[in-house]
Structures are given as structure tokens and as C-alpha cells.
Length: 451
Image 1: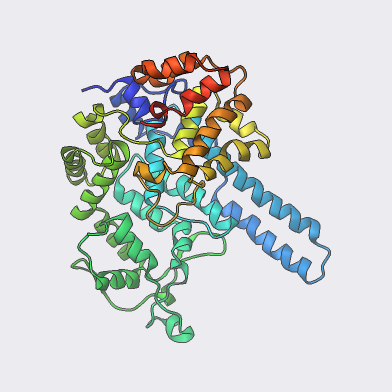
Image 2: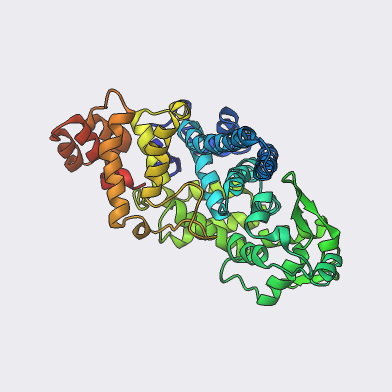
């Protein structure tokens, strides 16, 4: 069964019209997942190690300034350089999603970014959240879920976010010397959220044993992951019935792979994919098809995508899901003809007003989910009076600032919604007192806000 271009764009992409050169068939979309990432190539980011260099310079220069040294200009320059990189990362997130000819790839990247949520504590951690996407998630979209779990878990962003960098085995060399203790944050989130799920059949002892196995993982001053033996809790650990012997990175990689390939993980990930892409209450057979593909292929992400895109449920019930705020802003940008290049060229004050502040008002601050379980999927979480008012306000006010000239509202409805452009909506848009109001009616309509 081949999905229509309308369903591929609205349910599995970021709306109509799609960027130039977008893939239009399921086989093309699936084949492309194994190839290069055009959006990342078009809008590249410096690696996290580069930001670490700037951060170290800033800290050093700030100390010199505080001690009375004449170093204020250097301190300011370092701070501005870090802020500039963070601005670049934020802009590129929008620009990549808006311009990518592989919208489904971008949707998968966003899904797994949310699945492996990290939350910033300061400007350095904030940039690390973007680095996690570039250095761990994007390179593994065409691989297996085990690849993703391993890359994400061992990335400095995750080690920093969940305080693994300070976790020390109580009986380790360093633990005995300095009295530092075990931190279970990473082990718990790894099992509860990233792999097995809340009802994954693990015990508190499994969490502790996994936390002990993970000791040794830390971050170098240059923001690279290191394995430090003096932190390692000695002895073997048993996690979910399997024993892991050895104080080395190989044992950690083995437990990560075993958790990623566990049958409970297959069920957990299949359910999350179906809920995110299809419905808050997805067809049970669709979940089962994705789960079966997971187990049959060792968690191949393209195989999961194939099971999702080729199941009959993929073609039914279009509009069952509400577009989250980020999805809405990208879809609206497509509708208004705003390119990623336009976003990158905006003045900082305009970019913040048009996108970042608007996103915040709609309830989805960029890369700042409310907790480690990511953003809520249910529509009720997003359709609150203030958040809905923010969408309507953006729809009515922002197109005039972004698009010149404004599109014809009736044509806008037909182009962006296809068969979902109802007579009621096109009539209301045609009778609007101005083009701006007509465009606002379309963008704030239930039809446009659902996928």
C-alpha cells in the first residue's frame, strides 16, 4: 500500500507544501535513511569540543577579571562567542527542519531527541543538548536502536545531565579515598525511559547493579567521554538476570546492547512510535507490527519505520494527532514560504520574537522538556487557554511580518490541507475582512493544527 503525498506530508512530515526535492514515496523515504543527512550538511554546527574550548576560555578570563586583571573585554568576547554558537544551534534546528527534503528523517530525529531527553542547566549544557542530536542521534537514524542507545548514553550531554560524571563506586579506589558515592540517575532513566519502560520488569536491585556497572564513565575537561578505572565499583554486576564481569568499556557497551534489544524494549519503543505518529490510542495491530519488526531485525530503525509506514493504520484517521508547537511553527513556515535560509538570516531579535519566544508561549521551550520523559503526546496538554491563545495570536499577527505578499487565504487552505480543506474553512477564509485575518483563520484552524 502506497501512502498519498498528502498523508506523507501531513502525518509523517511537517505539512504542505513540502520543501523542494522532497521524497514522495515510502520506498524512497526508507532508502534515504541509510544515506547522508542533507539537513545537517546544509546547516552544520561546530562540535561540542569546540564549545568546551570557548567555555574554558570564558571561565579563565572571568577569574582573571574578578581578581583585578584588566580582562573585561576578553571575558565579554568569550561570552558573546558562546552565545553566538547557541544562537546558531537554535536557528539551525528550525532551518534544518524547514528546508530538509527528507521531512520523515527530521520527524524521526525529533522523536528520538525527545525520547532521549536532556535538559540544560546552563549555557554549556544547553549547547550540549544540540550536540547530542548532531553527534549521537542523527548519525544513527539509519542504524539500530542499540546504536542509538549506546551513542546517546555515552555522549557527554547525557553523562552531564544525569550526573553520571560524578558517580563513583563506594568501594572503588576513588570512592574509598574521597568518600564519593554512587549516583543512580543514568541507570534509572536508561531502564525506565530509554529502554525497558516503566513496567519493564526490572527491580531496584537491577538499577543499583547497573549504576555500579556504569561507574567509571566520566567527562574530560575537553568534553569527551572517558572511562576512569579508579571510579569503578569492583566485582561483577547482574542486570536483568545477566552477569557482566569486567571493569571496562566493553562491559558497559554489552549491557547497553542487551537492554536495547530486550523484548520489553521492543514493546516500549513500538508503542511510543505508534502514539507519536498515528494516534494517542493507536491500533494495537500497528504496535504489534512495529514490535515484531524490532525483534526480527535487532531493532533496525529503518525496519521500524517500514512497519509504521506500511501498516494500514498509517493511511487512516488523518488529523488524529495535534501538532506540537514546534511542528506548528515549521508547518506554518512552509505555508508562508519561509525558508531555512530566511530564518538563518533574521536579526536575533526577530528570530527570538518570531520563533523562540512564540514557542515558549505555546508551551514548548526549545530543547527544554519539563522532565526526563520528554514532551507530552496528548492534545489536552497543548490545548490550554493560554497556549491556544498563543497559537491564535501568532497566526493572526506573525504572517504579516514574515510573508510579503501574504498568500490568498482560500488558496492557502487548499495548498496546505489538500482534501482536509473543508468548505466551512474556505468560506470563512474568503469572507475575512483582510488577507491577514484570512491567513490567520487558516493557520489557527483545527484542520491546520492537526496532523
